[in-house]
Figure 1 (cartoon, helix red, strand yellow):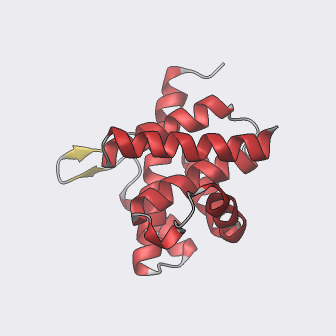
Figure 2: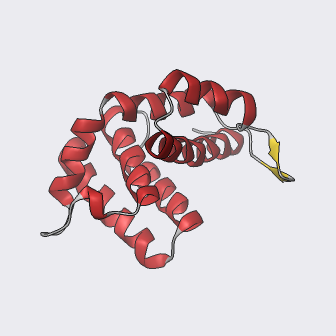
Length: 150
């Protein structure tokens, strides 16, 4: 049974992981430097008067490092689930990181139930996008889950 505070800290870790992966893609920041920057300056800190929730650091590190290490495998799974004529390059860069992080959890974090992983990343999608895009995240991650968890 997860406690509400653990659940909240994992939610914060997921959102931060998507932000870190986005930064890595846009700036090419080295993984060790990226993790250190988030540990020192983002996770649980106040930035421009916005208090960032305390994130579960080990979980954040695992998601970011796991996506980095398994990006080709993750991207292949995602590509198989996109509609014909679509590819990952056509996706919004934030959307791509949400899908990568969610796919990593479904692939590598058997301790996280499928429904939890999908709903958490749908929630992350809501932070950046409208309902239509959130439903897209739900559909793609549901397809990934059927492929890797059953």
